[in-house]
Image (cartoon, rainbow, N blue to C red; front, side, top):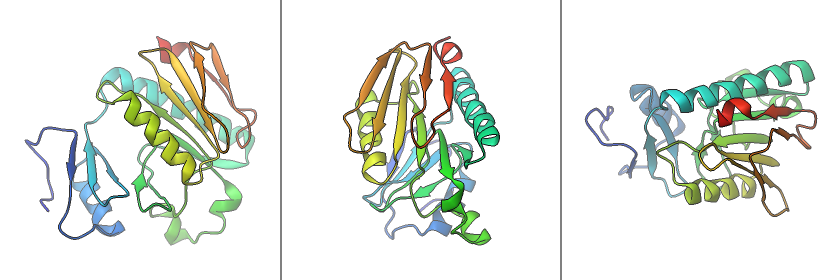
Length: 198
């Protein structure tokens, strides 16, 4: 598989002749920055365009708020969209923002923490971008939950909705909320939405 995707229209799905190892995927991602790269359960590699300015500002705001809360709360660690998670279904996905309980991270060696984490985050947020399909993103949210995520928020800044997914529950959709309140495992986290809608 070519190392660089210059002059290739994105997003694109690639099926390598031999499944990519974690090392291969990390090298491929590095060679194709700033594109976002994920490995699907089918073994296909999904390469997505970098964020546009407004979408990146939304993502940066959400990540900043989650980081600030996690630092003050002390029960876990937050990461941005560059962190990959190896899921039980064989996929390697990267949410826009995620949080993992410290007790789970403590079970991993320093080397393991330098790589894709071998489990799903406890909490995550995905933000719809102009190049995304809402039905596909909602299907991805179901995939996250089925792979062990306890709580997940899907934000659609264009339709003005937040869909809340939780293990064992039907999704709840909020229309233009002023804020979204975290429940377990991130009880106490509160995301004001004005900057997202703006």
